[in-house]
Length: 481
Image 1 (cartoon, rainbow, N blue to C red):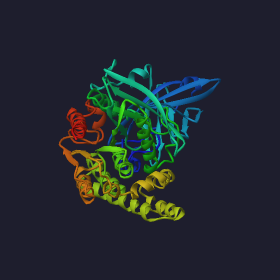
Image 2: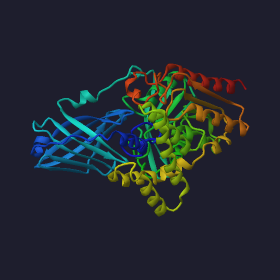
Image 3: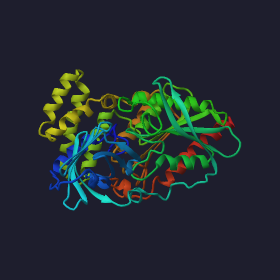
Image 4: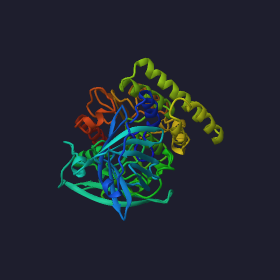
């Protein structure tokens, strides 16, 4: 589960609190030491990496000075986020404090004697981590990262930026529609990303999974619609207050838009959901008969609290904890999840969480952790059982999970997905565990989160072929009948 705000730590499922539990084991404290500095001397581009143990995230601070005052913005190249403004930038002597109200993040650090580095702490959500920033001459070059599978223009198909409204939520979604060359109407899919703020390409760690997937499908004769999340990039709305059910209405608005396009065959509109998107797809298909098929990529079949607990243990062990220590961390996570799931009264829950978290994470982080754990998204997610919707899905289903996925365990979820579909009488489904693939469907050595950015492959070509082949086979069968 990713954070619903800026630094989501990992794609798809929110691990901010889990990372805080892990980081609390290390006790790392940044060194201090400062020199008096003027605003103009701090201005410039500053580069650093937030080390979460399980993975690393690059950040860029852009600081400008005007009339002896500072303003600043922040980029996260690995998450496709640029220009996030800091609401406050304060310099006192050699101490710098940057506060972002939008992301609920904060950097506090000191500048070195030679004015070449800023050393301090980045705090956000339940995590507080050392961050060393170095002055850079060319931040753009440091940020630039291309992957071998990224498609290059000109494309052999039509690409169009579009806007459509979700009247239920009174927001507008900005998206890209790609339409195959030739004569339609064409089958179409809507891509639904995992949790946290995603642009239409589901950009993460220098990869653009949805761009690669859309390019492949469109070349195979399948139209694709992919949108920025509400409140992200060019889409309007508030992501911070949205639950999984709210996000499902955004996806349904996309289906309604596809039905207005003459190039699209309205009888063959499907959904492809990744991670949380793999929960949303059957949620919609269970009630909306305009959905002709769904593809679940790392979707879950058990309630959210079970998924989060399992991933906490798997990621802790992959990050270097012993199996016994990882199980202890997982057990602590389960206790907290049980509190959130079973305590209805907000005041009682907040008090119980503060008591439970005391001693597990630093006191300064408890307020942020309680805020995350009691958010509407988190409370909805951990209580929601995707099997309820899966039992009502009657359209064809393709469910794929990577065997090395540490975030949504294939062993935990694929049997549950199969059981729910069978219980509902669905006889048109395919469920596959894919050997050697991680949560992003990359060919991986261990599945560890830190590999996501290290691996050059964005999506295994075998997965791309499997998805397109399955959809085209459905289309061919329908045409033959």
